[in-house]
Image 1 (cartoon, rainbow, N blue to C red):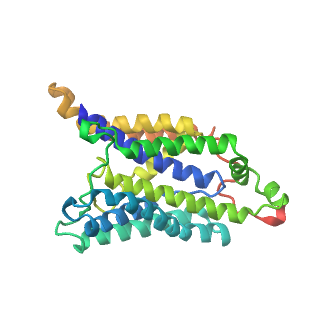
Image 2 (cartoon, rainbow, N blue to C red):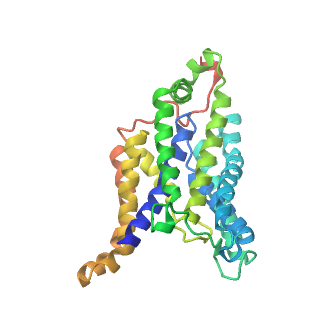
Image 3 (cartoon, rainbow, N blue to C red):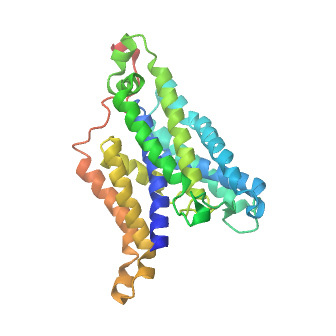
Length: 308
């Protein structure tokens, strides 16, 4: 049962960062299906740097500076999506797909290169989760606190701050924002950068928690796409998104551990089905909410100043 909750918590952390990454971009009107690719870059950076600074687990605390740096690097990488989407007014879906393909290629190349360890298709950072009160048997990972703080902070930002309301208006009515003398382009670039930073942190935390067990195999196993599905399930509202993150992470964890926590053979046989349920749920969510979607009104629409 302990492993069940450890995996569920780890997946909740990763899915929270993935879904909020998509939210921060789309709230400003930029569709970001490149969350998966951006998370790959963050995970790759943490895993690679870990092979140098945390050899044999001798410097586990170095993740405290490696992780933020991974977020920054991914934010810069996200500009590859921002430039065509915002400045060139390109199709944002096409740009996002290109980013995902590029990132996956980079991730798989370095994971299979053998440059960072002797294991094939695995980059091992040797990192272990930092847990609160570990000396006293505490099992709450620091990353869980970060995920909760991020979710609460984003909620308060959009709900109660002037900047948050202005940020959201860029995705709802960019022409009105532009008429008020506020740069839509600046906000959208900033939104994609923030989205990239959060995705990079999520990818890094995938490696640093029980979800990745300190290793990276070159891809994110679709968690970036699940994050987008959770965002849609939550109708771009952070409190509903967190409910989705809890549900998805529990189903995944149950599927991975059901065979170990029951002695009933018939249940053990169907345990793998629980690993499929989140993906089936993704399809169902997309179908159910496709017509009643409450996405920002201007999401995916390039800003045209002449239409004021």
